[in-house]
Image (cartoon, rainbow, N blue to C red):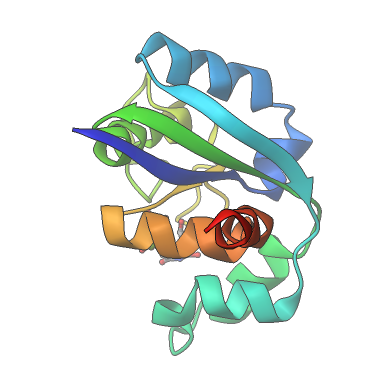
Length: 145
Ligand code: UDP
Ligand code: MG
């Protein structure tokens, strides 16, 4: 099914200059990266994005990681884009992620914070996250209605 999803190169992925490599992997899987922008996040947007993890003991580490440098926000389109991006990313824990996946190849092997990339986990969450990180697109849509 034709879908779109939200992907985000995290600060470690930006520091390791992995944007071109990630885009190449998406394109090789017949996905199209339709939007790309660099952003500096603030505490509030990180708290919204990781609301499901606020109670976890690792949340403070995760938040300071996400604030440690710019991220690159992407919208990725194509057939089964949500699950394809998740497959290309690999497991959350980079040392369990298979070689050939983005996290398996580039993630820090200490579990699990520094794992290079985020990808939405459902079509519904993809739309919520696109709205969160690309509010300007939503406004454009409202204008032409
Ligand atoms: N995370 C962490 N410690 C953990 C589990 C997760 O720091 O024990 C971080 C990691 O950066 C992960 C993010 O929290 O990507 C979101 O966790 P989630 O379970 O949603 O994994 P994902 O969907 O990113 O694979
Ligand atoms: Mg997740």
